[in-house]
Amino acid sequence: RSDPVVLGIETSCDETGVGIVRGSTLLANVIASSMEEHARYGGVVPEVAARAHLEALGPTLRSAVDEAGITLDEVDAIAVTNGPGLAGALMVGVGAAKALALSLDVPIYAVNHLVGHVGADVLADDEPFEYPTIALLVSGGHTSLLLVHDLTSDVELLGETIDDAAGEAFDKVARVLGLAYPGGPRIDAAAVDGDPRAIRFPRGLTKPKDLVRHRYDFSFSGLKTAVARWVEQRQDAGEPLPVGDVAASFREAVADVLVGKAIAACVDLGVPRLLLGGGVVANARVRALAAERADAAGIALRIPPLSLCTDNGAMIAALGAQRIMAGHEPSDLGFGADSTLPV
Ligand code: KG4
Ligand code: ZN
Image (cartoon, rainbow, N blue to C red; front, side, top):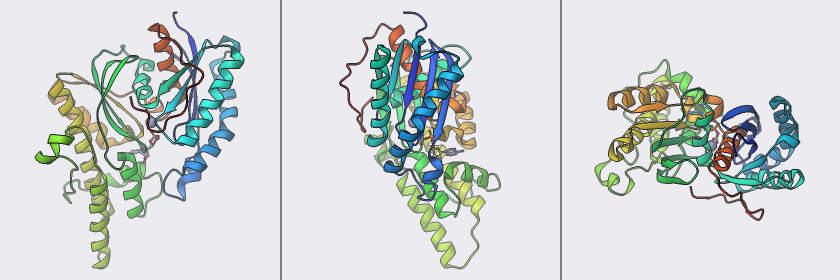
């Protein structure tokens, strides 16, 4: 059917997101974040996140319906993230979504979080998406490179991080530098005054021998350790810490690997389109380097507005609507939450 009204629920990490779309048109996108509650731990605490979702979901649902200017009986279907993500956090969203679908007597669609990030692009204002496309999704919880043949039926995982997510590396390095959580924006700001060539930090999984098995995979834990060791040596020597240079050099290493592997995938596979998603896409150097290298390689680059790049419910609703419009069957009400759900 055309232009279904879909309400999407996202609770895979620390953002409680409820979005409402009509077909490919965004009606509402409301987010409550428990980030501040995690700040003192320097990272997302699963139990804290799950409890925060439980408290935030009702009010967030209410606000989204109000923002969309609809009544609940206008909703044609529910979409919900059922993985990958934090198990307890996912269960809050899945439970609520099922109850809502039952009470409204509408179908429900279980959505993969990563594919949802790709789906966000259909809500952007400009021209529709073309396939195949390569998608690089980078946040505090994931770092994945996808080959999207078809948004609703054919998405292939090319590679992912084998240890830390890129955003997690930003958060951990920020801690080492004495910067607050979340570290990404702080490092981005500190890097403005630094020299990205001051320190040559390692680029994970880029050596010829690594490329054989891990061409499209990422690794950031070695980089994180290298930064920590560098900082420690400075401090032991009683020398002042050049925070700007460390931040800029670290940021450069992350951006270089992320963009390098994404562009390599486009070139190798002959796919001249690259979509970026996830909170790390806010990074100024990642954006600039992606634009520069995509341009040089003749690759079209798309970055949805940041409010659609970070975790949100609208992208989940959008993917549900795409599935309906492509004629897919809804999910059976018995589906579970799967913290390691594959694409
Ligand atoms: O997508 P997101 O909002 O939530 C999830 O992690 O699921 O991403 C948050 C992550 C955090 O690790 C944060 O440090 C990182 O994105 N981040 C950034 C920047 N802004 C946010 N990383 C690098 N540079 C930034 N400007
Ligand atoms: Zn995400």
